[in-house]
Each structure stands twice: as structure tokens, then as C-alpha cells.
Image (cartoon, rainbow, N blue to C red; front, side):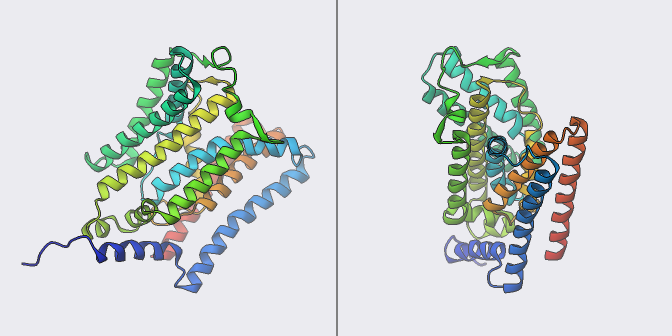
Length: 344
């Protein structure tokens, strides 16, 4: 009887294979095809900007572009964390209501308890990390499908946000008048701080995904979880860490949106999870896992924000806005399905 396979060179081989499959750089044709898909997303963004600029002279103005970037911040931050989860082949439906819960907890720490703002910020981020921990444990140890586990967390987080806040907004203006500067303050003239926070987080996410062990294991688990496990990697532990890492982004998003509104709104997160997931898919990350990029996610988030903002400027009624966004999401999922068929 052969001895159990031990971690070692085989682990590195599995992980490197997963990374190579993601980048496809050894196959020039596949690599160019991947670059074309990413360029297609960027081209779509440019086309939307040109279209709305022609349709309305109010679109391509400095103030409106700043508004678009500001609205991209929350969706973009949520999408950055969700990218890691979807690359593993998972999903997280709890990020919207989870963001609201993180905002409410920040409000409780800062306003109700009178703690310093930086303590409240850390508390809000840790709330998101705790949610990620619970999601990861439910998925890995209880063997719940990610869809079910995060759907349950979505409902729990939404309920907790309402219960803890007393179904009422928590305002920061009295206890922490400078709290709104986290999102609306200006370090670089004309650019809200929320945009800078998003840019910094995008750089961090890119470095983690492309340069660290967490990023390599993210691709490896999404490409072939069983092979990664058999090679000696503790896939349960790394999956939990990935969900916790994504939860930290949910916490930051909660703080940014609370700062932007100068209040913690317990019902604010509904629907954000779908926009964030759509941004990730539009950016080229596969729902089946094993493939994705941070740059693509950023482009996808910008596409979602430009689309919504442009429709509003054109005075399109909200119900029709939802229809258009829904069609875009459907098209993105269909294109992802076509890419996956071509891979197989």
C-alpha cells in the first residue's frame, strides 16, 4: 500500500498549474483571446460613455464623472471582495445586507457607545470578517452549498441590521461630525476620498490575488478543489480565509456608504449584492471558478455605474432602469456560459 501523498512539490505543481490555466500564457492563442475578452469589457465601457455623452450634454461633465466614480466606490469595493469568492467557484449573496449590518455596527460603536471613530471603523470591518468566517465554516464544515449558506446569512444580516438599529437610521452628525469625510472628504482636489479608498483597495486586491499564497490558492481551489486537497493543501482553512478576506471588503463598503450618507441605514444594502456580482461577471470572472481578474472587476463596476447614471440622466423611469440592468446581467451570464463551453 502506497503512503499518503504529502505536501511538497506536488502542491506547488497543482497551484502553478491552476495559475497557468488562469493566465493561459503558455498558449498564445488562449492568452490573446483572454486579453480580447478583457478589452471587450473596456470597449463596452467606452461605448457607453460615448453614447450617454451624445444623448445628454450633462453626462460628460467633471461633476457628473465625479458622481459616477463616487457611486462606483461602494459597488466596486463589494465586487473586489466578491471576485475572490467567485474565482473559487463560490458565491456570496450576503454582501448587500452584510454591508448594511457593518454600517449599523459602526454606528452603534461610534454613536451609541461613544467610541472613537477609528474603533468604530475597525469594529465595522471585523463585523464583515466575522460574517465571512461564518459563511466559510458553513460551506466547508457543514457542507452547505455557497448559495444556500450565503442566502441564509443575507437574511440573518438583514434582520440583525433592523433589530440592532431599532428599524431607524443611526446618524453620525452629532457624535462624529467628521465621519462623513471618510467618503466625502477631499485629499486630491475634485476626487472624493471614497474613490481613493476604492483605488487603494483595488491595488491591494490585485497584489493579493497575483502575488500571494492566498491568491494562488484562490485560483487553485476554483480550478480543481479536489486535486488541490489531495496535493496536501488544507482547502477548508483556505476557503474560510478567502471568505473572511472578502468579508473585510464588505465591512469597508459598509463604512464608506455610511460615511457617504452620514448615517447607518439598516435597509440600504438590498440589491447591492446583485450589482456587485454582475460587475464581477461582466469583468470576465467565471461563475464556474478558476478564472478572473481585479482589473476586469473594476471595469465591470464602472460599466454598472455608468449605465445606471446614464439612464438616470436621460430621465429613464426607475422600472425601465431595472429592466435594462437585468438584461445586461443576463447577457453577461450568457457570455460567461459561452466562454465556459469553449473551454470544455
